[in-house]
Image: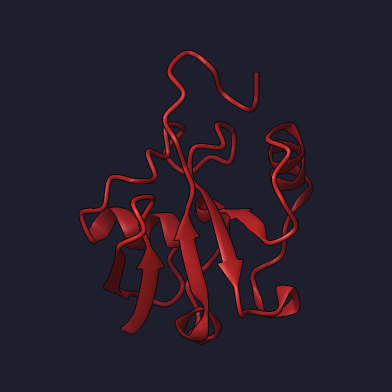
Length: 112
């Protein structure tokens, strides 16, 4: 298990235990944090699990596939933003700063 420090939308910092190989979304949800709705259940189609990952090189993260790139473009997401459902927990995340940005947007999905 790895320790990850998450910055919640209200600015609080919360440390969670995360299982390597699972998605960051699963780690956040398993910790009981409801800041990332993941409306599509991790299928990379809604954009409600948006996070910003600082202090980690992009090359050290799991690859950003075309489907995720499309969702991020529709959200006008910044350079360091990713979808938590597409980022796999690894030791490189343990040293990073992960800010939870996801928001519930009823009736509107980035994939629409």
